Image (cartoon, helix red, strand yellow):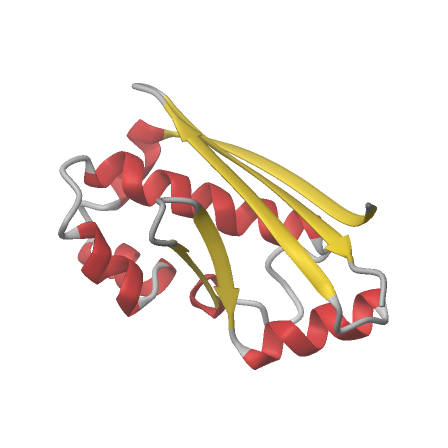
Length: 130
């Protein structure tokens, strides 16, 4: 395994709960797909907190943070049919990652966890051998 990036982020769930009181927060940070998916989830605070942490962990893994015209909505977190979380992003992010790591052949691993007070996300980016 050739790890080319890793990032971790932890967020206090109360912070996200407070932020969600402002309707513009969710629209500014989360994709339409994430907002739709949240309606199926009983614990919206932890649902959004994990996704917020995942986006932060991802930009840490690519080493940019939220600058260079990277926005929260450029990144979306979903779950596959087995519930495993996965990152998707637009072409702007794909091009940035390709340029930064000099490869278009990479795999991203995402792990999410939460408990009553905190949510955490961990991202690993692996350059695949051709």
